[in-house]
Structure formats: structure tokens, C-alpha cells
Length: 611
Ligand code: F6R
Image (cartoon, rainbow, N blue to C red; front, top):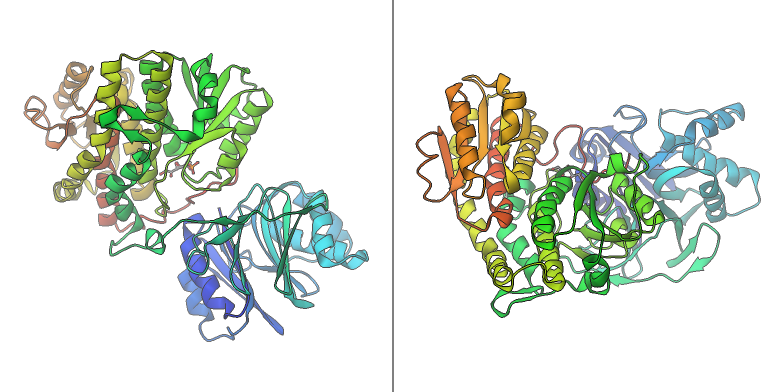
């Protein structure tokens, strides 16, 4: 939710910032702006994508060596030029970008209005910069101290970067609840919402912690916390290749990321699984293995696609570990009064590691004494830092807003976690365990075989691109895949789609079925195969159009369905890793054929840092 970039150093700031904003555009794309400080302060802002801003700015003075930029996902105030960031204070001396929400902005605005401040936008961020200005002008403190004092009074979430016309050698940044990374170059500093705008220039970064303030002045970085205590910067080396954040010849990030899955699942398993030797080890949870093995219950909290991965994990954990599992939407869990105890283990799943609801749910469970594990993709993000332990998914940067490779990497990690615990607990037979390790090891090759189905899926997509509704049905391990398939389609193609357990169809959704209703069945050979065959017959009897994802060689469903997509056989517990791939491709092609922007669907942002 909003991407921010800042630069100070020996280069021209604008190209660094605009490229950085393009890399962060997945975080928000309804308006964008830059502020460049070069004796004068020049601020350029435009509603729309970063490309619109770039076009607008091209004839303007762009030579400054210090600047900030922002790409917005609107919270307060509709997308417009005047609501776009950066925001300039009333005196014209301070300019700020902000990612987050200031909850008490209305009270501050009233106070500032009474003092004569005026506002050009409807944003909380413009109030915030003027609040800082007011403190700065009315106390005898320097700007960094004024920022710190303001931060002690605002309620909400923020990542901010501020410049002052009075001192072009100074950049002040701070975070609470919204991510912020400082990149350390040679006589230059970068600031960004994540490391992707930075890795082109340096691999040395400092991830700011909540309530920390970074002051970059005269080529020096100082970090202090909001209590005014100086902190020693913890410099990390990031291991990310530039090509991982570029399209690499694909038309969209989404299709690149779908095709990356054999590699990303392989990366996730590497160094953890040695199937031939029967070895499986997730170092990140080792210290908590006894606690997990003896847990009363496992609670999984997540949102969206990550929640679907959690549902798959529920089935796997219960089947093999014999520990009760509950899967909760983080947004619901955090606002009720859940019963959580010290013998509960919570697994928080998040691609971005920044989802506000998931973070809040973690804090709630932590306050009740539970052990919290994280399954996250973005290294150094907030969730891994808020949890007791966890495992990264190592899927590499996921830039397409619709999650694909993160989902399969999450399931891979969760399956490994479940098998490691089941084995440690003695809840799984050695032969079953060994077989599952071999099955897991074979997944990347099987996913690669699914990708060969791409041309066939493109042809099916052409037939259904004008549909207005879709049903996705699955049972058992394939039920969460039905939910995920429906979510993928609706979020990028804007076609209404519902996922259901196939057996629930007769309790309501069957009323929707007629000759215009495409029904996607995920009907691979597993324990509920015979039942789902009956469900397909029920749909065909009502003239629904059936697209069925089946196991290679299946002739029974082939004779009933209108279209079949044959995927390689696998153990049913791991089938979601395979059966989801054709659904990702189906939604991708339909969205492209409908002319939708698949990487940046309307109203969405990749990292949901607001409630
Ligand atoms: C859907 C999608 C979202 C995310 C959700 C949680 O394609 O990407 O539903 O899964 O916003 O995000 P993370 O996993 O970053 O916590």
C-alpha cells in the first residue's frame, strides 16, 4: 500500500526515484509524485501510473541530487493530482511522502486549522507534514527532533521521508507499521518501501524497525528510536539478483512468476529436503520443534491467497501430525476475543510479511502466550521479525499483484513443516514419510509438465473469456484450490467467480447452473474421486459447461466433461501444488484476452498495510 523512494548522494535523484517507483508500483498505482531539492523545491504529481508522472515530468528541471517519490494506493481522499504525494507544508519548506494511515489526523487537523493552517488535499499525510512543521516552528528544536516529537503524538501507521529546503543535505525517515529500508551506497543513501529499488546500486541495507528514525545528514546515517535513544544500525547484505525483479522477456510478471514455479518450489526445498536419504530439516523452527510437537492446537492466520495455503496446510497437519488445526482470517481473529493459550502454536502465513491484519493477529496471539511461527516470502519484512521463529519460502520477489509462486512455495514449506513435526512426533509411518519426501522432491518436475499445458489452456480460455460467472468446485485437498482458482479469476479478470466444496453445490449454488455457467472441477484421483464424478454428472445434467482438471490418463471424467486438463499424478496431499497451476494459467489468459491489466488489477495492491 503505497511505495516510497528517497535518494541523496552524487547521482541525479530523479532517475533513481522514477525507476524505484516503477519497481514499487505493485504497492499502489492510482497516483504518483516526486519532490526534487536543488536550491529550489520542485514537486511534480500526477493522478495515474508512474508512467504518466514520468511523461509529465520529462520537460521539467530534474537535475537535483536529493529527492523523494511516492506511488499511491488511496486511503484518505480519492486518487487525484492534489491528493498525490509528496505533500508540502504551509511554509513551503518541508516536503514529505507517507505510506500508512494516521488515525488521529482529524483532531490534529482541527487543531492546525484553528492555528491558521490550510490544506490543499484531503489526505492525512498533508496534516502530518504540517503537524511536524508546527512543532518545528514553535519549539527551539532541530527538524529531526521535531519529527520525533510529532511521532510521539500521532496514532497509526507510517513510513515517512521528509526533506527540508533549509537543509538540502538532510533526509529524515521513520517507520511504524509500514516498511522502510535504507540502502547504503558509497557516499549515497537510498530509502525505499522494500529493497527492490535499491539492489541495482548496493546490497548493503538497514531495515528500520518500528518507531525508529533514520537521519541522513552530511553523508552520515544516524538511527534513533522514538524515545531518543541512539541505535546501532544493523547492516544486512541482501541476496537478490536484478533479473529476479525484471520481466525477463515475459509480457507480464504474473506469467513469468507462474512459469518460475518449478524453480521457486525447487529453491524452497533446496537444502531442506534430501528425499533419497530420508532427510528433512527446517532450521528456522528447530528451536521450537518440541513446543510444536506438543502443541494443543495449531492456529493458522493469514489473508487471501495465503489463507488458502493455510487451508491446504490444515488438511496436511491434521492428516499426518494428528494435531487439531484451525485456520482463521487474520482480520476476523484480531477483532474478536479468541481463546488462545500457551500451548497453542500459531502459524502466520504472508507473502509480503507486511499485511496489517496478519501482523495485528500475531500481536494478539503473542499477548496470550502462544508460540508464533512465520511462513513469509519477503526476507527482513515485519512478520518474520514479529514471530518467534519461522521459515522463509524463498520464492524470490513476487511482483504481479495476483499471488502465484508464493502460494505454491507456502504450501511447500507448510508441507515440510507438517512432515517434520509428524516424523518427530512419531505420528507418521516411516514408509509413508519416506514416500511423501520422494513425492515432494518430484513436485518441481511435475509443475514443469503442467506448464506444457499452457497452449491448451489458452484455447480453453478463448472459449470462456466472455463468461460473466464461474464456479470452481473441489473436494478434500482440492477444495482450497477451488477457492484459489476463483480468487485468481475474479481479481484479475473482474469476472464473478465462486469457489465451493463440490458437495456443497447441492445446498445452494446448483441453482445457478444452466448452459451459460462454466464450472471448473478440480477432480484429480484422490480419496473423494468417485464423489466428485457424481458432482460432475449433477452439473452436466443441468447443462453446465464443465472444465475438469484431472489426473493424466483419466478416461471417466474425459467422457463427461466439455474440456479436460490432464495433470501429472501425485500424492493427494501435495496435489494442490500441481492442480492450481492450470487455474493460474486459465485466469491469466482470460484476463489478458479481456484486456485487463493483470499485473496491476484495479483497486488492489500487493502489500496490504492498512486494515
Ligand atoms: C491474491 C493475493 C492476496 C494476498 C493477501 C495476503 O492473489 O495476493 O489475496 O494473498 O493480500 O497477502 P500476504 O500474503 O502478503 O499477507
